[in-house]
Length: 321
View 1 (tube, one colour):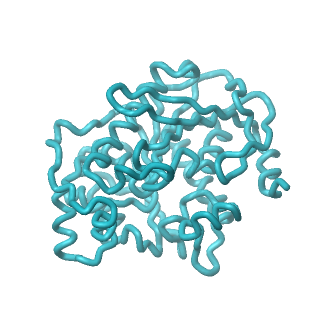
View 2 (tube, helix red, strand yellow):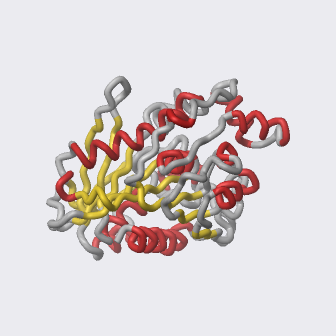
View 3 (spheres, helix red, strand yellow):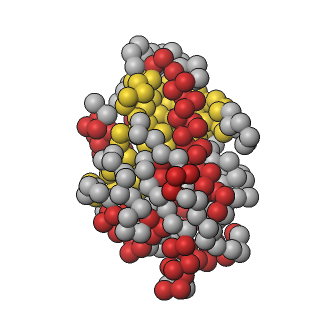
C-alpha cells in the first residue's frame, strides 16, 4: 500500500527524475540523479527505501533553470535528501545529487581517510562540470545560478568547493584537547590513523560559479580554524542540530559560523539531532538503520521537513534569482 503522504506529493506540480553516470577519468565513475521541473504527470516510484511521485525520464519544462548540487554525509547516498531535492525541483530548480564513491551506504572503504576528505570536493566539482558541459539536459541548466547543499561531511565538502581551505592538523589538536570527541573515535574505528598532512592551499578545488550555500549539521568544522573560510564569498544558510552528538556544535557549527567572512543565516531547530535533516524515514528504513531514524521525544521529522524544505527553497530563490 502506498503511504498517504506519497499521494499528497502527487497533488503538487510535476517533477521529473533521471539517474545517470558521471565519468571521472582516473577515478571511479560517480552515480548521480536529477530532479527537475517536468511536463508529464508523475507516478509512484521506489527509490531505495523511499517512495516518490516523479515522472521518470520526463521532459523538462522549457527554459534555463538554476542548479543545486547535493553532497550527502558519510554513509549516505544520492537519495539521502530526496525530499528536499524534490521540493526544490517543484519550485523550478534542477537538482543533482550524487553518491560519493567509497564513502556511502554500500561502500565505506574510504570513510574516515585523508583521501576521502581530498576526493569529496573534487567529486562535487566534477559533477558540476559534467552537468553544465556534457549532460544530456545541460541546455536547460543556467550555469550562472549554481547553489550547493551539504549535510554533515557533505557540508565540509561544499564549504571546500566554495572556497574553504581545511587544515587536517586540527584533528590532532582536537583529539589532544577533547580525547573523547566522537570525531576521534570515528577515525580510529574506520582507519586507525589521522589525516594530519594537508595539501597546500593552491591544490584545493574551488569554484566561483557557486553562488549560494546551504549546510546542515556540519562535520569537521574545526579543520577550518579561524581563517580557513575567509575566501568563501557565497551567502551561507547554516542549520545547526540542537542535540548533535555526532558533530558537536562547539567545534563544528560554531567554528563555521564565526569563521565565515559574512555572518551566515543561522537556524537551530529545537530538538533536532544530527540526522534530523535526512529525509523522514520509512518503516523499512527504520528497521534497517534505526540510529539515523531516532528523533527526540516530541520532534516530528516529517512536520519539521515541511518547514525546512520550504526555507531551503526560499534561500536558494533569494540568492539564485
